[in-house]
Image (cartoon, rainbow over all chains, first blue to last red; front, side, top):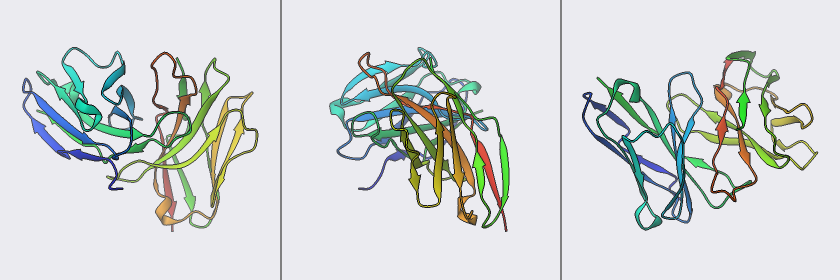
Length: 114
Length: 118
């Protein structure tokens, strides 16, 4: 069990550029989640997958954001035409099923838009 | 929609003392799960303790225990014998037990920054 892995850990990009983050969940976990966290705030839910199906998207996920989980394994979160307001830490998490099952978090990917 | 409120942005406690972090939540659901997560500086979030809403018995994990008051929608975390390694942000989180509509995931509070004084 290597835990949830996220890459890159840090990304600085110019406004208007596209960025992509990758998440590798714990191998047997069927559920994968993306959250956004800004300084001094708790994580905010963005979207989640059960296997390869994207089952829920937050209204925070504007049209510039897209997430995929091909074949139900790793996931990518792409932000197009980045804005300064997108600067945040993007957290990925995974779990085996619902309910009381632990949701495990990665270390996050920090995005700074300049 | 559910909301989670942590009214203490920061708490400070002397090493070896006991501290209680507050959390209240709002929901119309009767069945759900509550969690406390710890996020050390620049490190990943880890689960501290969890509670099922339909269980009246308060959860305990070593030095960590909760006081779950369902009617009051309160879920506080007590840390006994505080240690330097307990210093972190602590987040209270809610998870619905019903995911039939495709919804799942955690709703977090804003967090409490816990400082341990040697």
